[in-house]
Amino acid sequence: MMAWLKQIAFIALVMVLPGIIAFYLCFPDGYPAFSGVAFTRPTLIIDAGHGGEDGGAISLTGTLESHLNLAIAQRVDLVLGLFGAPSCMVRQQDVSLHDSQASTLREKKNSDLRNRVELVSQQENAVLLSIHQNSFPSGKYSGAQVFFAPTDGSQSLADAMQEALRAAADPSNTRQMAPISKTVYLLNHVACPAVLVECGFLTNPAEEQRLREPGYQTKLAAAMSGCWLRYSGNFQS
Image (cartoon, rainbow, N blue to C red; front, side):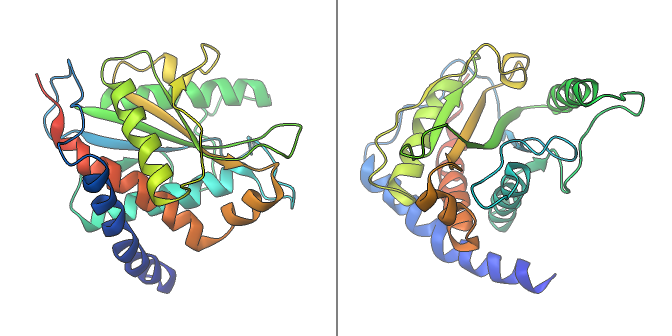
């Protein structure tokens, strides 16, 4: 194991446990179970948004969104691995998942999205977590926000994930979870529970700086992982 993985593993253990404890304190009677989903021991599919030619948004300092998405996604996967929770990474490198016959950037992006949907559909008992970064012309906006797919169980997971990020990463964040836009292909074409996390705004100077810090990336990952570890056993038939 590389040195940075060992460092992240140690930090994740230190940070994820307080996150889980915080949720038990916030919801001492338990959180509403994901209703109507007949999954047992679900596998969390961790999707680092964009990749390769499609770098996504660009931060104020020139960092590509796809790089930040991957850094946070790898940390989520590592934390879940430490706790023995089933997970699967959509991509482990800065690559696009398009078919070889795709030539233009648009063709590659469309092919990439279709292949991500296919990957999720092939995984039995899947739940999708797609990780992204936000941006806006004005730099005044900040805060992580969770969006949910129009599938059973997605809204409950988004509600829990939003509280996780608020409690463990940014208590001042007042953003609320919301339904995903119909223009977002991935979450509108999967059949399983799915959420998309916008971890923060790359156009806000203070938040952009935090998002580039490995420690804050681990804090976000710990919050999402802690939420998943807390609630993944609550799927009911």
